[in-house]
Length: 360
Ligand SMILES: Cc1cc2nc3c(=O)[nH]c(=O)nc-3n(C[C@H](O)[C@H](O)[C@H](O)COP(=O)(O)OP(=O)(O)OC[C@H]3O[C@@H](n4cnc5c(N)ncnc54)[C@H](O)[C@@H]3O)c2cc1C
Image 1 (cartoon, rainbow, N blue to C red):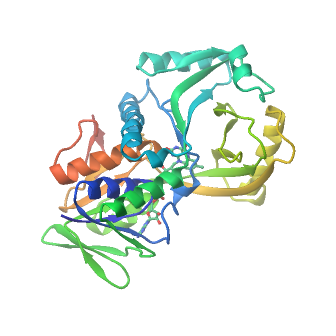
Image 2 (cartoon, rainbow, N blue to C red):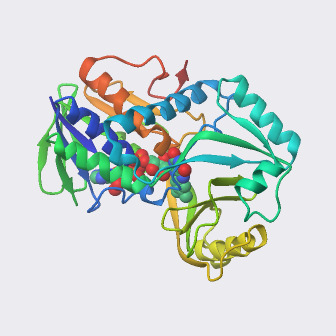
């Protein structure tokens, strides 16, 4: 089977890897010159269950939980993918009652999560100045480098014979007799029996000529990077106004929402305000500096469900998009491959139609 995958972000790369591993002839295309050039290269890298919604959206919570379990499979199959990944995160809300409810809801849904007290928090994270009364400790969470994981998928797909076409934008998809037959760049057309469209926020642009859309929204967020010369944070910390982690090279990453593009609300200004906030929150080493601030546009669906499956109306056209994509990519890579190669659709995935309506 000849399969063209459009988009070498984490989702397209995970699918290309699984397909190539199963013996499909895969060609992966990206308009950028390297993997992880889209929003994947701007992600924080938190693989977690705790931001899922066990009560208000149990269907998507179940998918997220499977997504995290899939990381155990990935660890066995591709150990290099999780190089430098660190486990564990501490999360607290504005009030202790809210934090307790958070732990209660997740535990009731079957998650491994503990409520830890202020003494434990202070012992674990001595740099915290303002220690909350309690926090949710999620031991199975991972902090990892999304770009490295993305590149590992691409390298592994190459190892299984996939072909990479970087610097090639897909400008159109060709169909004949009701089925997709090729992808087209400015210079050439490449035949395919199946086309997987994993182009993140630009998926609808590519599939709209077929009169269909998955309703992908573009949701901006900022990734801030700071230099630091020694370790002082040990887990991902997520409080009411800050989400931060320290990487193995001691640099700090902060992720936050992005609501405007005026200078005072631009990424660098947000980064400077966050640095002031971190000085108030932590006993930080001297000389921590803002190094980089960038906005990434997340492919987003308000109902919290991934879009993964063949589109109705034209045979052989498959779409793959999800938020949060780092958490779900290894799972979606496997499930897409099972569906494309074996015709087996996972019962985890809601069925969707042209209007993007899902039923569980
Ligand atoms: C600040 C921030 C923090 C985040 N933190 C997390 C987190 O902690 N955990 C988590 O799970 N998620 C997180 N995310 C979300 C995560 O980054 C995305 O869900 C994920 O990266 C989406 O991957 P993707 O492969 O769909 O998209 P992308 O990485 O954008 O990949 C799509 C690729 O398709 C290519 N492409 C598009 N159109 C074409 C075309 N016509 N021809 C050829 N190539 C094309 C693009 O160049 C791009 O490389 C975060 C995002 C941001 C911005």
